[in-house]
Length: 319
Image (tube, rainbow, N blue to C red):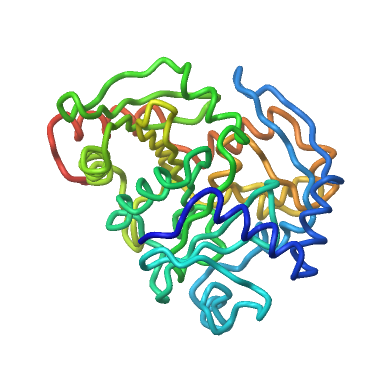
């Protein structure tokens, strides 16, 4: 798995801008993206107007729609201009429709479903290799526009407000893996999060698996609903933030007329950058709207109490 580094992926981005018009134009457009800042339950949230993200926020991710389209993450279906860096079973490619100035997608080489539990160790290793970046994962019903092809994404660490806020949050320790790691629970701006702080991948993976076993899993779901952010600190500790979910999309996504907000929350949105692909949504969305969306798609205090009890007593989910 040699050859992957921050220098290598940033060189890839520079080369893709030079060689591929779509990448050059869309990254240049980021300079024109409008943003405004809101305060949601005491938490900083940026609202971004980014019309190029319409293909993601409005993606049809039901089984019938997926069956009718070619997978855009498979090698044979990607644009001929798209290059990448192979790392084990993955390839790092530039995201041609960016939210961030440095935005990468990391799909598996094989077409395999979006699942996290067997790949959380890979996610943590990626965060270790790409120091200064945050690697993030959208569950198959939590904002992933390609739920049929396993992938991560990566962007420069610190771009999402939640990353800084998690460092100063008040946390309740739920589980400990000796001196090597801990699993804590926190609530930031209406979003319940679980934070794994580990010295090594093995400890982090064990704590994640313990959390995973306690998360709600309902009939018909492939895995518990969640978004995950992961990065390595300057002290070489691996921080993994898991945001459990109660549903995929809020009611306002499906509303008619003025009540509609085309917001399909994923890791970035719950990380504190709410992406609006429609100008009208950007101009009218309020802090109250975002608070309502967070409340609707995230788990409740009651859910947290049940999950914590299951973790402490090493039970598996019974939801």
